[in-house]
Length: 124
Image (tube, rainbow, N blue to C red):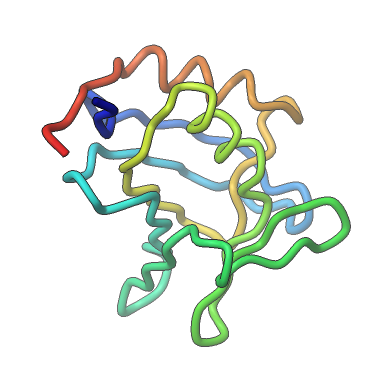
């Protein structure tokens, strides 16, 4: 039986957005089974949640962007790759800007953060 997976603990990172040049704080939190990967723009009031599903997605010049009701989060591709590498199904990703920080331009920093948090199997 295949089970879902989330993080064991909260992880945080900080970097700069490639397109905007803005400093971005990133917090990835464990989420209950069947949540999926949900990006939360905590820089907005009210907070906007965008679920990472194909119908919300758009590939813009090699960068995956998701959007809902005119609000977007861009450059999610490396973080999503890291979730896939670790088989993480459920997580909340809080961001303080409209794009995921670029880090070193690969999935490795996100892989490291996820490995540092640990993986927890869920009963679903």
